[in-house]
Image (cartoon, rainbow, N blue to C red; front, side, top):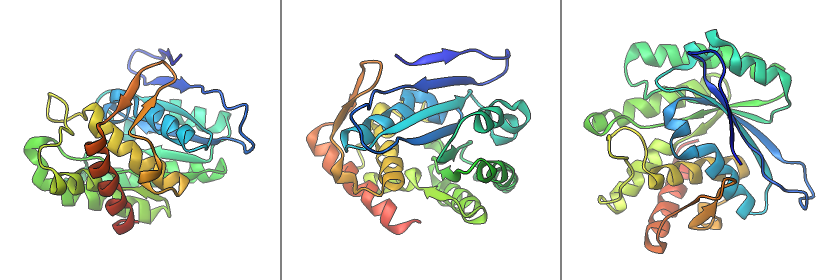
Length: 244
């Protein structure tokens, strides 16, 4: 069962997704997610872990998230840094808002560098999870990509081009419901596609190696139809192949 622990009134929640992989021969890949509602909506970290499990790879995920905050707030709050220092990690996935504007791009780069220094001291590698703009600002997708790509390059981190996979999916099928009702947060389908990108890159697996539906640790099932799966797998593969 997923567990949430409330911290300070403003502070992010720490969410654990413990999965049983006693049968696995290799130690689990430990991944910490640091972000906001674009990470915790639909529990993206748990979808990543379930996809990995379906492919025979143990991945343990935890997350430090809160609505509407950027990496500067995570840095000042200290929860993510304390968790980073207190447990062993292999990868730390960093995410804030779309960051298309020059000021938010600079903020993303600056705090990615701060976090990256501590991530590497902890023996882990930073990753930048590229999100997407809201539906009404979709024309800014190139700027969003560049903000995250440049931040990842600056810290020699892993670039996770989920937003580009969304674009590649819409080129194939413009009717795909990747946004939720508010036109900003992902639908379950949108989160599934983002998870395909993240799991594919972190595990070095082709997206078509993952199933169209997975059961999360809390019993929920997240998935897509067979026809949607073919489109999403191709879109994720395109984004992973083009953007590194």
